[in-house]
Image 1 (tube, rainbow, N blue to C red):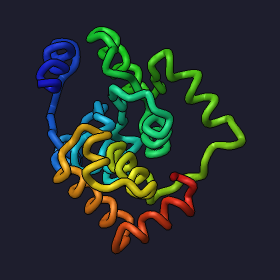
Image 2 (spheres, rainbow, N blue to C red):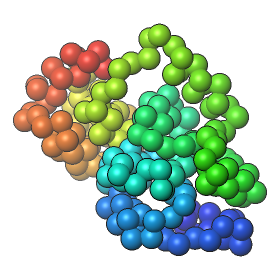
Image 3 (spheres, one colour):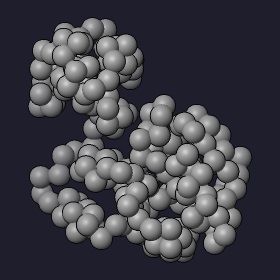
Length: 199
C-alpha cells in the first residue's frame, strides 16, 4: 500500500522501472534494471536497507541510493550512509519534495531531511563516533531491540509484551540474530552484546 502511494505521488515526474517487497527482490530488481536512483526503505524485510547496499556495493557510482524511512534514529541514519546511500529522507516528506530529492541524488548531490542534515554532520565530525561494526550493521532495527532485551535477561514472553509482538515473532528474531552473528545460544549472545556495551 505504501509503495502504491509513493508511485502515485512521483509516477508522473519520475520513471519508475521496478518495485520490490524485500531485500532479495530489491537486489534482483536493482541488478536487472540498473536505475539511476533507488528509493530504499531502511527497514525493508529480509535484512533492511543496509543489506541491499551491501549486496549492491559493486554498482555504486552507476546506481545511487536514497534512503526513505519513518525512523530518524542515529543508528539507522549512520548505518545506511556508511553503506553508501547518498541521502536520507523521512516518510513525512511530500510528493514534490521527494521528486526533487530523487532528482538531486540522480545529479550526484547528497540529500537529507532538514532535521537530519545537522545531525549527520555532527555525527560524522564527532570524535566519539562509534567505529564501524559490520556484525551489528547486519541486524535490522527490530533485531537489535530484541538482542538488547535478550542480553538484559528478559524472557521471550516479556520481550513480546514490551515490543507488542508475538512470542513466535520474538523467536524468529532471535534465530535471525544468532544466525547473522554466528552464535549458538542466548548466553553467547549476551556475552557478545556485553563486550560491545550494547546492554
